[in-house]
Length: 223
Image (cartoon, rainbow, N blue to C red; front, top):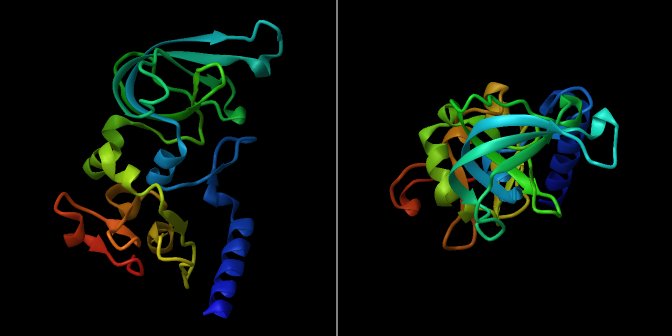
């Protein structure tokens, strides 16, 4: 078991080092791709909102164009995460340049977005290319439901991306993400339909559906 696990870990490291295509972002901005649940769990703020305006702002003590930020004015529709940090959000901020992970959004007040991000020390919310940012209509019904509570139920679980067979788990609280292995894409069935949540026995497993969780679990070894 130990030797097999070591082989799997070594193989995974080699693949991650060799395949830069597994990471996304503009030139100069490199992001480790993550399952939507991982984005949710790692973000401080997750909201549904419209972008109603935008303007370029600069720090008062800097003239560098690389310090400029886009200030998006938003209309908050729903907050999925961050109640304990903020009661309301009027603006989100992102770098002007995509090379610094800045993200361009439609500010016409017509498109609803799912926005995930984190907070600066002064209470401002920052978003970028490495966050989970999608037009709301692009999300699956399961993803929309999972945002309400299922993703949160699995934040103590670990999602491990499987790039090539064999895939290995190192603990019972781990779910294997096999979308890339099956389709050479990471935004497929498991990303769009499943959440990795903790079961009553402390183990973690993929879950899909609206019925009682114990009736609709996918075995951790099953893609």
